[in-house]
Image (cartoon, rainbow over all chains, first blue to last red; front, side, top):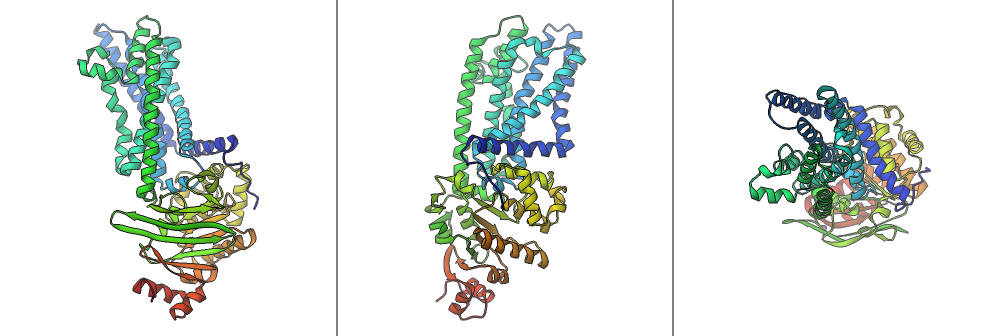
Length: 273
Length: 243
């Protein structure tokens, strides 16, 4: 036998392990047309529905800017998919009873999550490319009209989505497979206060205060400002990025603590049953 | 040289004392069995040795390294197979093995997968989806996964459970030659007493979370005044701790 491995703590070994997770998920996507279909289905449905709502409102002289609604749909998908794709990647290991196989490899929890995140980026990029093209072809809306602000807007939403995914994964580790509903729904808890389709100012005052603590609300407010002709609000984006750091910190702590708890209570073993 | 040393492992789940002071040592090239009736604590013990379950007290040392402190180094030199575990069903066997080869940080995953496929005679399965495998084929693929990193310690939970007698015999032969020729230590659980008699150097009997008897198959049979391991098992399972 001639299996030669990189030194386990070397950079090559770390990246090889992360690449192993990405390779596995890419291969699974290639083998499953349903997964490819699923990447496109919901984003396209949302875009079509909201796009025609926009056209209807526009035809009835409702005074608002069409691009704001379509921009909101597209950016909401970034947050939604970032959260769901990472959660689904983890759940697929739960569903296939493969989680124990992974936990007895030298892969560290952080490497596993990094692999899931990298794969989610590939799927999000694919889905978004289709949506952006459709938005332009069907409604004449170019997402790039948001300008340079688009990059930090998307980055804040991606990081928030990944943090929420870690919380969802932690919930499944803590409460078992039955908690997977959290993986699908957690992001929607944030939707009302994120001001996705309306300005935060329409919310009652207590919810407005709550909204300031949600990174996504600063992104959607910023997007509306930019599409209304204002410059990119770098100060609020910096605040959103700071909040992201806090969210990720809490999510990582929760994930680590839950994993420790799952090992202590024997819950991790039960994922093999 | 001791590859694995477990010292006074204990684990309680609520009111159940699953493992109660288990200590064992596995040396290089040694084949050791952990036997006992259902619920005796075998799987919990194996899972503590793999770091899947944290012991309430006691510790695990492998290759002279503390498992809790050197998890990555230790697990890169160990592997595990259990027929009850699954594999991603949509993937082809080759893709599953390739992905695990990467997870173990192997330099040339494809070459290693080819070697293991030849060793386990699973070449014809490489292009099949794991979801389409029979349980026996699935067990062989799991064993293939377990050999990928050329482990120094192989932990196997019922390695031949789903195999027909011919395939089971060939796998037993393979595992014994891996242990004897490469010095890989094997720790197995099994409910097949003939298999354990033929393969194992040392046997530990667990009952109610405690090791109640240890030795070779012949020593245990002599100790209990019976003819074979099957009767030792029945005696331990029915009477618990021996006199």
